[in-house]
View 1 (tube, helix red, strand yellow):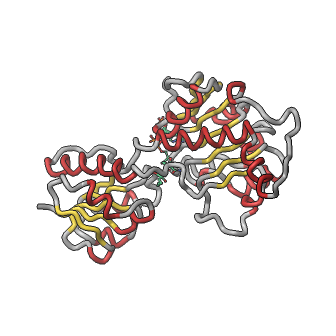
View 2 (cartoon, rainbow, N blue to C red):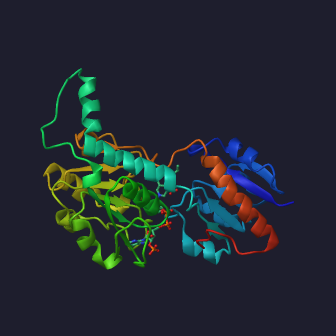
View 3 (spheres, rainbow, N blue to C red):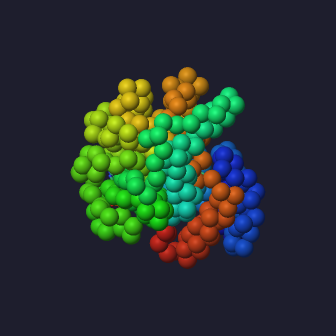
Length: 307
Ligand code: NDP
Ligand code: 7N6
């Protein structure tokens, strides 16, 4: 029987033992392992990447994240190690978190919560609150996350546009723009929601020029990866009121350093990379690993294969 290692780093998201139990029906030895204890592992389910993985006898690594930007694709390929990711499981959670950000900005909830701390009964100017039914969102990246956001925004009556590499129609999205038309796509949107993977093409996708192209009351939402946005250009745009606000789940450096100006900005919502959190996370990972463990044992092509 082959051994599937559950790397202890998954503990950043769920108890490693919970995944082992959820996979107890799989015909393999399942062990919670540390990096220096991979000897008999053929497969590894992991959150972190360590270059010592390359020296073990691994055939297949599964990332418990959709984002695999921390993994060295070429070295894995050269080492004959397959890499699979966890795309496909975050549409509802990240969709709901993003709707929560948009509702907060539309109805002003984050500001009332701030006032509540000071026991302050403070009503907003007449023209500040608005309805999402009258608002527009441009979703940049229309895969699992983007569709999860777009269908929910559409259900609330929002005007939904989106951007993807191949601009094929997407349910709930009125206009789908190709990646090259990003500036046009985001120019009229009240909300711009980023849901792309971090790649060479998307690093710094939103910089000074794109922030300048956005409406002065626009809110930037980043549930993708920190480096997709030029964070210092974002801080400048927020400080100079070039845009209206931001809701950020991901940052160039995580945890967000205590000295970041983003913490103190009234119209910035900071969440600690939890947009996808759910107590069912380990079960969703188990379903992906169970299917690929079967395929791996049968010599079939793996799903969600990246390398
Ligand atoms: P998918 O692979 O399902 O979707 C990615 C989408 O991005 C596709 O629509 C793709 O276009 C589009 N895209 C890729 N490159 C570009 C580009 N240069 N310009 C415009 N669009 C582009 O991924 P997921 O939706 O599952 O996840 C996306 C990313 O979100 C992950 O890689 C991860 O980094 C992050 N993430 C963050 C989470 C969090 O907790 N905050 C949770 C889960 C994911 P096309 O369809 O044309 O190929
Ligand atoms: C763990 C975060 C991803 O890329 O970053 C996210 O899948 C997951 C809850």
